[in-house]
Amino acid sequence: MTLSLDRTWQPVALCRGNHSHLFFPPSAQERKEERERREARAKSICQICPVRSQCLDYAMEIREPYGIWGGFTESERRQLPAAAAV
Image (cartoon, rainbow, N blue to C red; front, side):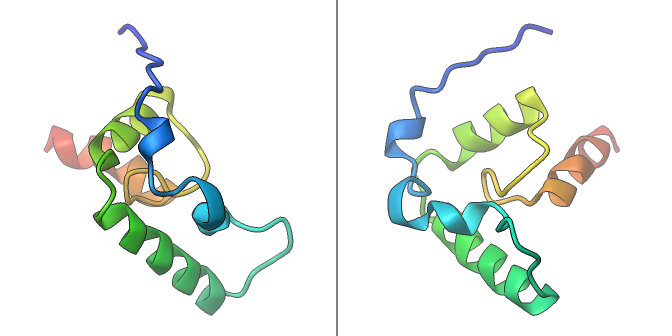
């Protein structure tokens, strides 16, 4: 497998800038309800992002362990390869 570390899509990603804090957990502990709200807001941004598929492909390729990428959380991304194999 050859890793393609192409990041040319990142400058147009809607997660950049003022909303970037939504895509990764804070350094302090957050309550379940806070996490769910943050993740829902991040995913709603992903839904309209023009580079969502490139983002998800990148995260899957590098096995990104943190944050929301392409509209999927860490645990959701871990389930994707298993779902694709079925």
